[in-house]
Image 1 (tube, helix red, strand yellow):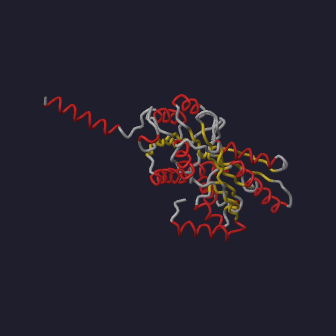
Image 2: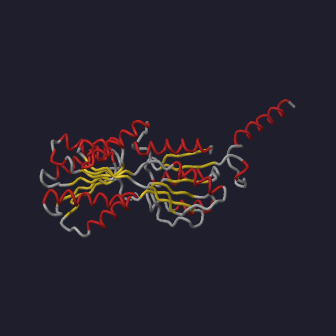
Length: 334
């Protein structure tokens, strides 16, 4: 009898332990909403800030939050998503590493009958169809256009006409922000055939990658052969600046353009080293978690939810400095 009583007690404890996991047949009112988040990577300050803010917003909304970090590995991200779906969340949020390779997540969510929200980067699928409920992204295509326009302005001021050579420190070829930014860049540059991108190399969205790739470019192209350095993320721009300073190639200072909006990069705009920094902030938590709650409650949500970006220019340093002062006073991590 003691053994039976002990076994019963264990079963009660186990039931209590697993009770927080959503049952496949549970309704939203049965327990706290569970939101699963598949993070593409945690390799730079943008990603770390994004993860922290997602977790903070989940707590503030009172939802249970489970998460997995793919570590910049597409296969692992798909496996992570499978494992997250096996825990029967109410909603799955994904920041996809690559746009084409992560398309299977749509079928996975359709099969599991779990609503899907894509944030930060897009996938090659149509939001608002099936369980793919909403896409929440910034326009990297717009960012690419803005960097192209600044490049034209810089080169026209330098040579009296729109001509010159650009090197591109790329984040990751298959990532949707890179694809979209290139689309925006190319749309502008098709009217300026004398501005040529003479080299492109992936740097993995890291400062170390930016340093390495820029060192390669500086060795391949002596002084006078590079006019503009373009990058896809702040850390890479900072790495490129370090390589430029180490090689005493100061002629390139003031001719770096990039996106990301990390505060250290904006400081280099103030310093005059970066000509333009477009900001694609990492703060998706409020939009993503509130959208997840609306979906669980059966409310309609927009299939596409664009988030705005900011632009910081070295010829408008006061605006950049004011922004830095504001986020410093607010204790912002990014």
